[in-house]
Image (cartoon, rainbow, N blue to C red; front, side, top):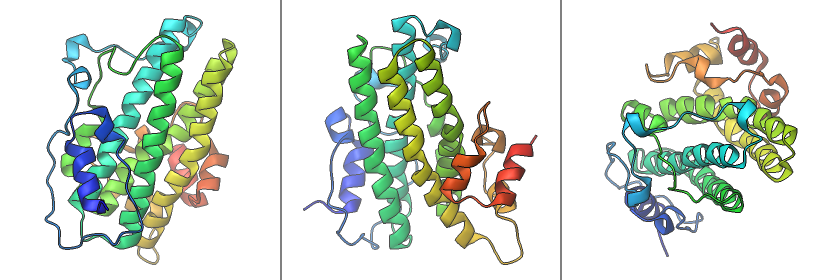
Length: 261
């Protein structure tokens, strides 16, 4: 059997995609004696090494998605987001070996979801003629990782920033793909949006538990962000109050998020 700690080490430091997709029995008790791991860049296969800034490509404009190659390029960017999410979940398990079991097992379940999401993106990209690693990738999610020195900061950065934003981005791209009659990609984005609700919900519950009586959850959220991660990154152009309510974020948080400037 593979312990959660060993699993996280292999996923994080592994330099093949097979290791990024490694499975684990989550019923095993977390190893609270493990040494805390500080941030270093995760292992990656050669074709997925972070590209120089001059070689990176911007996300295609929605108006270009009638082009099959632009749709594949968009999905490739989203797939890299999932790969970084896998690595950041593995990092949380290594960085906080003494965190409560509920936190560690919750993160482990999210890691397994991200593995599945990455595979869905890869399958759809291949149907469009592109493989993961065919295009340059960035390290956007990694930049905040060295400063995530407590589970609450990790939750605020990952679940309540990157994943909260996807409650807006994923439905928007489901519409963009549907507008160009790519119903397979549209359905994929709709599925991602639906499953992000639980991931944001994990963050919402942890944030609520960490908020002292009489204080506002949004204030605690703001106070635990890093300079890489401002609150405006936690929302998209089309703000979904409904999906945030489904995730368990409280009304004050939702309205503060909506009005944040």
